[in-house]
Image (cartoon, rainbow, N blue to C red; front, side, top):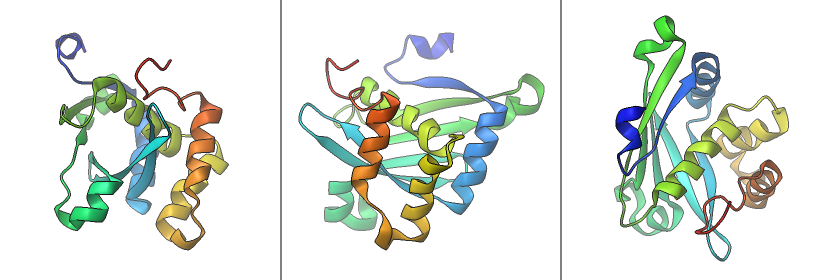
Length: 159
């Protein structure tokens, strides 16, 4: 953590129990639509899991570039210390032209909010997106963010 504190990126030590919940859920629900607060409104990012990596691409890039859309943020999870220390380390690789450290932190916090939650109603949004996309409502993601207090976290000057 000390090493990454001087870098222009984000990192975390995630308790093993929480990461186990997140990882288990990522296997049955490998994608989700995350909402990043902006000065005006929200920008949507699709998060896609690949084992211990979570790749984020803006929805607009996916709509225009399809499968060639680049990842603007990748969260890497390292479970090596899970048994011995009870934590999973997380680091990030980000494209600073498209995403700030503050915005990356907001998206990382949302991973825990939506995939690591104890609230069934919150996780149900992830399940609906993956298994019943015709019933998915993006405004419910925004409502959940605002209820959690993360709704203004991504905007410059937000808290």
